[in-house]
Image (cartoon, rainbow, N blue to C red; front, side, top):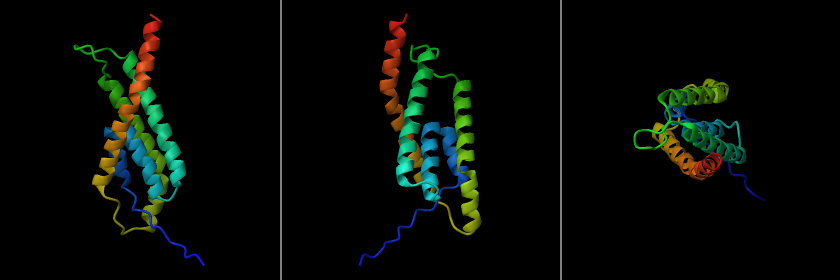
Amino acid sequence: MRKQVSVERPQPWSLVLVTAITFFLPAGGAVVAIRNMVRLGEIDARRALELTVATIVVFAAGYSGLLIVSQPDSSGAPTLSPIVTALLSLGTALAAFIFQRKEYVAWRQTHPGTDTGAWYAAIGWGLVYQFLTYFACIPFFLVLAIVTSAGS
């Protein structure tokens, strides 16, 4: 007879923390919000992986597209304007907040004295996923650069 093993999920991260990470690291924070939904027990690991891959691909393609149409700085490197960056950060943070608010509030009501997950782990994961998204931008950027230069 097999004994069932109960695996306890780590504590979810604070809603405010995840929203702040998403504001400063939009792509990384979006993935941290997905991981937080796993911690809240709302989605399983397989669905989280699918959403993570989709999020990284969408952000990488979006960043690449924005860089291709952006004005280069004095050194010739493409740079996003501060307004575009602020709108992207604000929109992503708002989406992350809305995405997990209901589930986090329900968790908090059933666990009133429980501490949330460690803030440094959430920030670390946000940085990892943000840099992974930047790395994923390279092929998108190269393809878009070739396509746009061939058209001119």
